[in-house]
Amino acid sequence: MIVSMRNGRTSEMNRGLALATWTRACFLLAGAGTASGVVLVPSQGAEAAVRVCKPAVVSALSSGQTELLAKQGALKSWTEKAKAYGPQFTSWRVATQKQLKCVKGKDGGFECVAFASPCMVQQNPRNPEGPLKRPKRNRSAPIEV
Image (cartoon, rainbow, N blue to C red; front, top):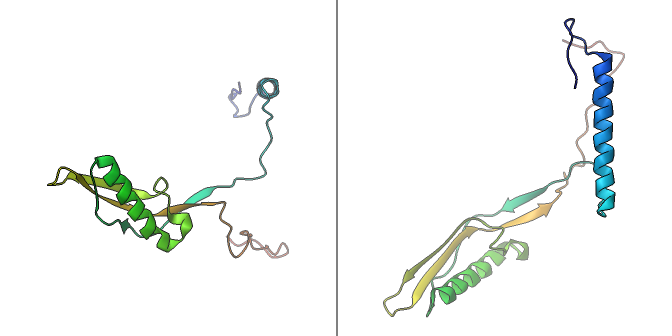
């Protein structure tokens, strides 16, 4: 535990205690991980996946004797229409703004329609211009304030 003293500085003894506690916790975690077959490996940097979406797609009206069959038909129609953006945009699970609406038909069956924005998950998108770099500062020039 790090405690501030009156002069605003941290006690060296408390700093050492905090470091020892932190080190012990890391060893305990690493020991528990290796005992269970898990190895902790430091990451080389943060990488993220992003969802890339296209404008909404509406399926054709699908009819079926059961609600399940009508829903399956509407989703199949939505998938076929979403394929226009590319095969990677055909997942209903990844889509956003999903709506699957059904009504009971006059003949006792069901009619359904699917509406959603097709999306894909892009793993670790790279900047086409390369990694962002800071401009080099001229160290001989004075710093402007």
